[in-house]
Length: 331
Image 1 (spheres, helix red, strand yellow):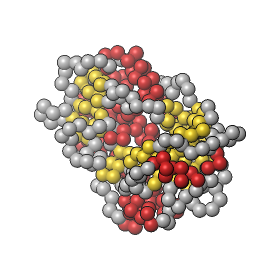
Image 2 (tube, rainbow, N blue to C red):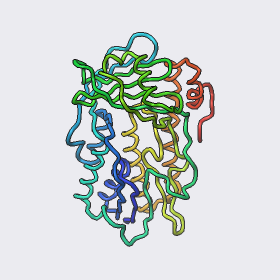
Image 3 (cartoon, rainbow, N blue to C red):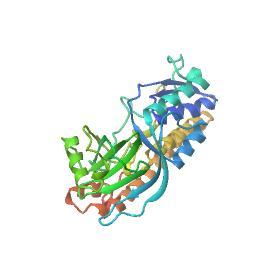
Image 4 (cartoon, rainbow, N blue to C red):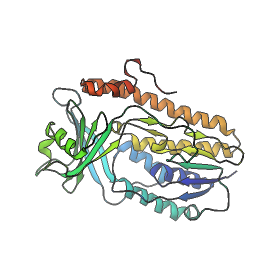
């Protein structure tokens, strides 16, 4: 049995769920949103392989290959460089490419809503009336800005460094540019100023010609929606939250894109099983449990890593929020 499904949004998770469902014959209607960009994404080999296996293709167009990662996480000398092949792509451009592929192979999925009332809505944005709010593990923010690499600098190695207040990540983007990111333990009023100060206090400063001239501060603590899956009821469609709308990892993990793809796979499986006659209630409960388990495991990793790097009291709230020293976890 096939069912009508509304995909509300055109992020990576929503597009992938639409692709999987349309490929299985379901009546999918995608409501695209304009992509905000550029948005650099760092994709590891495993994530690229997963993307290729789902879509039959990978990112095309402009990208930049990195071969190594150099880490100084705890006080003291850095670890030896790690061989870690990754590809830097524009996430907004990638979504446009996948949208084009979806429209080419399944043209009925993109366009005005059809006459059918959807049985399910898949989205990364909780719709009005959706129960619950995100549970957020801390208040930390990510500062991000671009700057030119200094002449002669290696543009094939991503570098992680730390100060007492923050970790910093330098990602070469190609064409002599780099993305500088810094994670700090709370909101920031002047992100450009603080990012420049943190760069000066780190070993990364000589690698840039000058600090970023503009920067943004984005909430970046891990978060989980307590009700990512709601089964259909009476005349109300079921809702499945995917991507960062369902679960968001700390950017340090480097697994955000892979996690978004996994939520799309699991959401498509829930809808497919329900369409085949399985009770959607237990399916939604299973979806929720899978995300909660992944979230607990991620917080446990953060709780092990962050105390090694940040003895500063300003990080105590973040450590507690990750479950350090027995703080309660959601669920």
